[in-house]
Length: 183
Image (cartoon, rainbow, N blue to C red; front, side, top):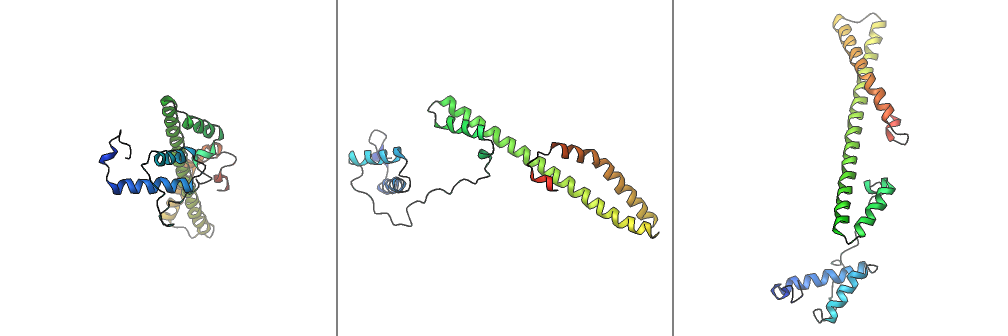
């Protein structure tokens, strides 16, 4: 956008001014980023940027918000370290590997979420069935159960019996530190 060799003369002054403001604000907010500071200093040495822009405080870009602690990239320390290493690399094949790793981590997270959703809906269904069965059994003990209610009770019992193996499988798949253990 600035350099003559990259057709910077075609960029409007408004675009050049805004880019200068952004790069300058980055040097303010990210002083630890040497490449940003060096790029800005190079623009000043080449005479492309004559003086630091006067950027109002509200226009200087704030630093990005920190990544949530429970990010999918923080859960597996080994993969997280590998990803960071791959992203720091200058080799295109490493960046492609990082992209594949990110995709696989996201896919794992989506599968985990889908499994949790299925587990929650199954547990909810069983809980509702058991609650309805409890009410019907109270009526049964008082001998106030109609034929239709007896059929409903039998249907609920059969549904719970069908869900039993699924509940055992879900329980066996639940990891020790999984929040689903409380359910």
